[in-house]
Amino acid sequence: MNQHDDNWDACPDGELSRMVGQIRAARQRRITNRAAAGAATLLIALTVVGLTASWLGGGAQAEQPAPIACPRVRELLPAYTQAKLDSDLNKRIAHHLEHCPRCRQLNEQLQQQAAAGAPFDQRLPGRPQLLVAARR
Image 1 (spheres, rainbow, N blue to C red):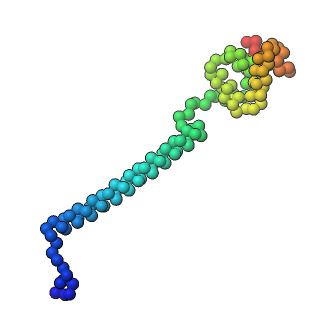
Image 2 (image 1 turned 30 degrees about the vertical axis):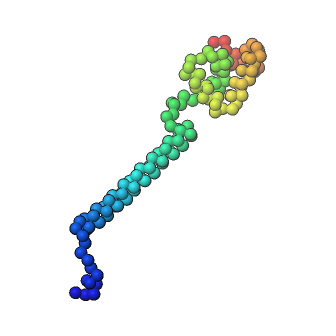
């Protein structure tokens, strides 16, 4: 025997089994912690993506109304102001007005004149197409 064998003591009964059990338990905790950290990271990422999409208007988006051209909007504005249009056309014009400053300004002028009590034939001179749409 060599000199290191003199310091060697026999392990008490079950000591090696206990140590192996501790090592296995520590390894299982590490695996569980890594899995939990990965799941938490994924959950946070999905939450951020969901909130960002919602914030940017993504999320569960409503169907966009069909586009409508400026000349058609200007033609229908008097009827739109008087709420005489069907809901689909109303939504299309409202969506257009959100994105078109010129038509939005024209609509605001019509609403101001209507609030002032001006008859439709005296509103927005030089726009006979508006008068035709208003009389329908």
